[in-house]
Image (cartoon, rainbow over all chains, first blue to last red; front, side, top):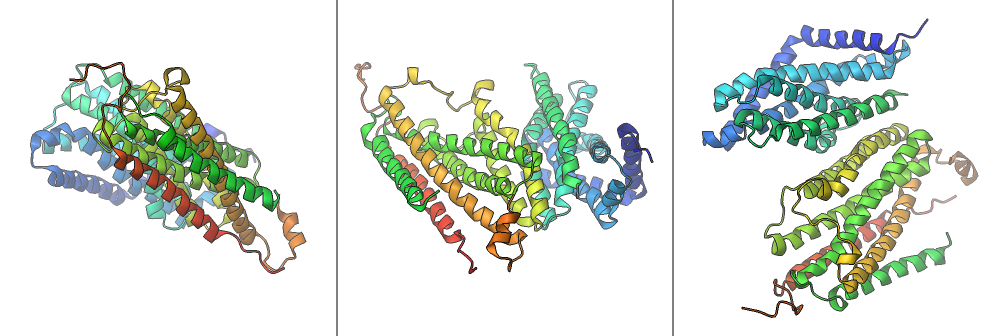
Length: 228
Length: 230
Length: 48
C-alpha cells in the first residue's frame, strides 16, 4: 500500500482533530468559560483601578490564553493516549510530521478562536479600545497562538506519557514561551493603546521569528518523540 | 583516568579557586566607579560563562544523541544540565547582589536577565522531565529533544546585550579594562573551568552508573555488562 | 567637592564589603554543597 503523502495526511488528520473538537463542544465551551473566569480573576486580583487594568489588558489576554492552552493541549493528547490512536496511526503508516502539523494547527485554530472570542469580553470588562487596525490584532492573535501550539504540541506529546503530566507540561512549556508571550502581550497593548513610536512591527518580527524557529524544530523533532 | 590524576586535578581546582579568591579580593584594584563592590565580577562572570558553556555542551550532546544514541551521551547530557543549572543559579544570585549597590535594584526586567532566568527555569524543567520518565530509552530521546528546544535561548542570552538596549553591561574587551582586572578575571575563569570539569566528570560517572543499573540484568557478570555498553 | 578626578581612589561607591562577602559566600557555599551532593550520590561498587 502506498504511503499517504504528507499534505494529504495532514489535511485528513487536521479535519479529524477539528471534528473531535466540534463533537465535544462541551469541552470547548468549558475552555471558553475557563478563560472568562481567568480574566475575571485577574480583574478582581489586580483591580479596581480600571485605568491600570486597561493598560495591562494585553497581558491578561495572553495569560488567559496561555493557561487555557495547557488545558487544551493536555486534552488533545489525553484523547490520543486513552485510545492508543497515535500508535494506530503510526501503524498505517502515517508520516509522524503529518500528525504534528495537523495537531499543532488544530490547537492553534482552537486557541485563536478562543482569543478572538475574548477580545469583546475585554472591551466590555476593561473598557479597552482597539486603536490600531483590527487586522493587526488578528495577525497578532494568529501568530501568538501558532507560537503556543508548536512547542505545546511537541511537549504535550512528551508529557502525556510521563508521570505528573499535568505539572510537567506547563513547567516545560512556560519558560520557552516567554519571548512569544512578551511580544504578543506588548503588541496587543499597542493595539489597545496606540503606537506613536511605531514599535508594533518589531514585536511582530520577534513573534514571527519565534514561530519560524519553533515550527521548524517541531516538524524536525516530533517524529523522534512518537517513535517506538 | 587514574585515581591519582583525578585527585590531583581536584586539588588543582581547589588551589585555583582559593588563589583566585585572594586575587579577586585583595590583589586586584578597586574599580574607579564601583569601588570594592566590583570584585563580585570575578565570581559572577566566570559563573555565567561556565553556565553558558555547559548549556552549549548540552546542546551538542543532545544533537549527537539523536544522531547516534549512546548511554554515555545521555549521561553526559544529564551532567551538563545539572552543573549548568548550578553555575547559572550562582551567576544570577551574584548578579542580583551586585545589582543592589550599583543599579539600586536586585532585579530588572531587561533582556539579559530575563533570557537567563528563562534558561535556568527551562533546565529545571529538563531535569524534572528526566525524573518523571521511567523508561530509560524514552527519557534519553525526549530529554534530547527538550534540550535542543531549550538551546535556542542560549545565543539569545549571550547576544541580548548587543541586540537590545539593556541595563546589563555590554561585553568589554581586555583593551578597555585595567590589566590587573583582566588577569584576575582570567585566573578565576580558569578556576571555574577546573571546577566545571571536576563536577561534569563526577556527575557523568553518577549518571552513567545509574544508566547501567537501569538497563542491564543485575545478576549478569561484569563482562556482559561491559559488552552492553555502547 | 572632590576635584582630584584623575586619581583612581576607592570609587564612588564606598565600602560595600558586605555585598562582596555575601556574593563570594554564596558562590563558595553553592560549590561546596554541590560537591557534597556529588559525593553522597557517588556510585558504590556492587559486589561482583
